[in-house]
Image (cartoon, rainbow, N blue to C red):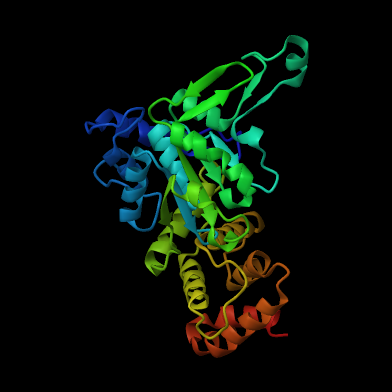
Length: 351
């Protein structure tokens, strides 16, 4: 992959694997799909025989249910705590099924109906009136026209009246353009994958009518320490895949971080932190430590780990500092092999 872009989409980063899977794929393919359902699962969950690496570390049965949901008339809604790889999973599904993950709408308080359906080039509209040339297609429009998946991130951040624009689109599989007197009917392969954070519950509650158009899957926090460690290492290595130099990752420090997150998630020795303790945050911490190690030419250290934990987790949450100090005193102090981590944390959190 070219090193002239900061982040490759899934279909770019894993183009070789997708091509390999397509060539070996003999299973039945749903209409409009690039791969069979079984091959989509192998792409996401890995296949040792085909040398396809695992990309989602979690419940394989959840992945299978998600794939089946997309085959049906309902869309797929993935909910969960922040940082549980909902967005990554939706991107992987879109890349494997549609061959592209770029049809994306980011839900915000400012999302409009036009962003869901279509808008106009107003200069052309004023000059020549409504026409297909003046029409600006939304990702939903393109997905319907091409028979692809469209992703809507953080749908509950959108106002409810904007969310409900989807109801008729999902029921009728038709997008009407009254200005032109035409309607776009969705081609096979079209569907919607939406994500929502549980922390946003109640911000803009989905209507019951819209909920009925989705099958819901809850993506859990990864609680398997060994799997989480493997995921963090693979994600950090992937971030350096195009770097001219590779850092030396200290796997013992990664194991320590994973255990700390596991302890804090289960309130071991501390009250629940306000900070998000997701695998995504752990990946960011290790990545920052690796950058520090690489560009300062120093081995990764417990002091770096504590500093990056502070910057990633604490932010402006002063109470979390007290909770971390209590965790150090009640739990970490007793773990003699963690002495360097205890000393670094004591200097920062137990002042």
